[in-house]
Length: 168
Image (cartoon, rainbow, N blue to C red; front, side):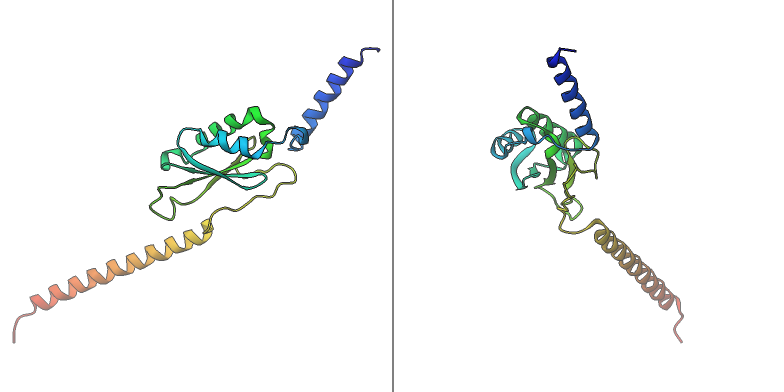
């Protein structure tokens, strides 16, 4: 009664808690694009950074050892002073990749577990080849390798059998 400052603080805290529970980013604390890009580029292992759209930040890293959730955490911590990192989903790709699997992009929202998004944000698929398609291709390659190995074994066995047949 009469302490409007305390009441306002409590209502603001309740509002903030409700926004977090709903995964609703704070519209008053949106992350500015260019300062965020510059800060993310200073993180160890990050070679370049670009915004894909207003909420998706793509970072190229120097090697597979940096394509992990710890690097995403470091980028998010660098962005935290700029505003509400619930706005940002970080995507990492290894620029030194040597295979298709190494090219896979690792993604996560700064404040949410992998695969979850803030309210109103859609999950952006950044990989050129979907994991299911890659798994199908890997299974087909393994099947082909097995068939080639069986054929080579059969050819070896046939050659040995022909070698062991006495002359008539």
